[in-house]
Figure (tube, helix red, strand yellow):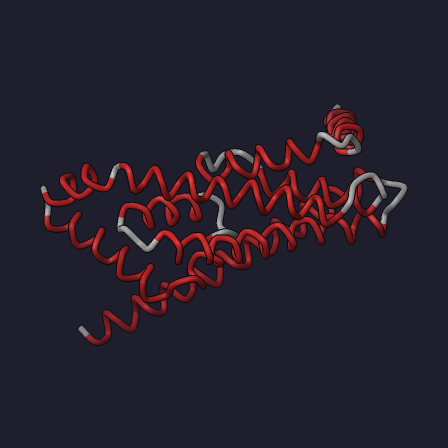
Length: 211
């Protein structure tokens, strides 16, 4: 039963991804995912990459659709943060701990800069928090847009190319190509999260040792 559901699902994805308008789907979902992190943008770009590997899409167009949608969405998230700056600051001023956290977020963004924006793009939910925080903490808009352009291009190229490689390798089996590419992307994301957690833990231990 489950196997039939999975097969039907992947067959439907294979059929939909072969149409030209699937590029618009990639753009829209990538845009929405920047503001609503439950939308599966990376999965959609991978599907487009698989379709490109099987000759049903153009890889560069898949990358362009994913990167441009994510770029617009991230800038929308920045704008949302910017619009609510005064409210957030009033809220933070009510408690010293809130003010400290908000100020710390601003310092981290300024200190770690573009690399933080690039890394956060590969962390579901994390990118939304960071892009909105960039607006709230009034990071320079041109600086933000430039780094987001780099981050979204790297992200879309990675996801689409991953799908493309599996799609080209398993040209006659779109379902296998998709699930292998999806599992690989999930494993990479998990590895990034583990490394990030270990680094934060070591940092906290060093801080406690100093104190």
